[in-house]
Every structure is written in structure tokens, then in C-alpha cells.
Length: 176
Image (cartoon, rainbow, N blue to C red; front, side, top):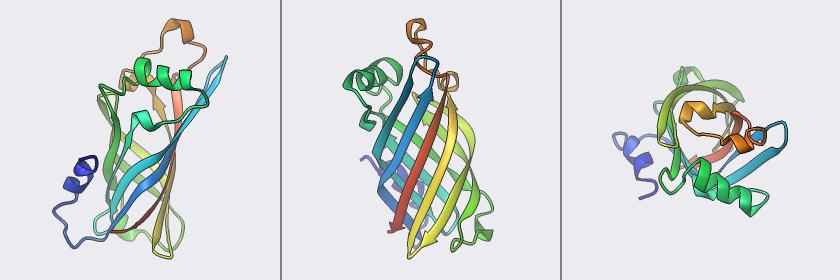
């Protein structure tokens, strides 16, 4: 069921050249006046359809690992409400896909919809894309404004959590 959304997105292209991962990495970093916070999740699932440049990535919020368990608990219960909103999803299209040379590291523009905390927004993300020995490598870094996704920061921790979070994604995808 976890990957149903991803596979439904690409179900129309049975013979398409699809590359998949279940072990991509997503991490985030918050730099605030009193504290830096970071967490990593190594269970990012994704698919890129190389016949048309469509993609989808999905990650369970509760799988982010923090340096201490109290941060992780507050993140899941108070800020991201992972029981109510269990996933972050990013799906869209790689711009000008047909003109990209996958054999060289290329900067690509990914336009799509990012959904987190029950809120979806159109986003444009620059990524590095390259295929080496049949494995596609994707790396990107982008900023997320908490207010854009209705993630509230209590006043008591206002100086501990940044209003803008830096998100990094790295994935190696293999042909399905």
C-alpha cells in the first residue's frame, strides 16, 4: 500500500523505463539562534519514468531520526503531527527532459507539487541528475518555509527552530 500512489502515477506506461529506490535519503537542517536541529531519513521511496521525465517521491515522517529522542517525539507529535499527516510527497515533471544527457552530471529543473503536513504547494527544485553504470543519481537541496505548510512554532521555542528549513535529498535509482 505504501507505494501504491507511486505506481498508480505511472501505471499508464507499462513499457516505460522506470527507475526505483526504496533507500533514498532525505535530511533537513534548521539553524536558529539558540540551536541547530537536523534529522535524517534513509527510507525515501521514489520512481522516475525516463520515457517522459515524470517522478514521484514519498517518505514517512516518523522515519526521521534525530540526535535525541525528545526532539524526535516533539517533531512527530507537536510540529508535523505524523499520525495525522504520515507522509511527505513530491511529484511532478523534470523540465526539458528529452534534451538531458544522462551520461553527464546535469542540473535539471523539477516542477511539481510538494505535500507535507496536509498542505500541498507548487514548487520548483533544481537537482543534479546523472546515470552511471545503469544507476541514476539524483541530488537536490531546497528550502521549506514552515508557514507555507501551516507548521506552527510555539513561542516558547521560537529561537530554537528556524522558520525556513533546508532539505536535502539524495537517491540512487535502479531500473525496474
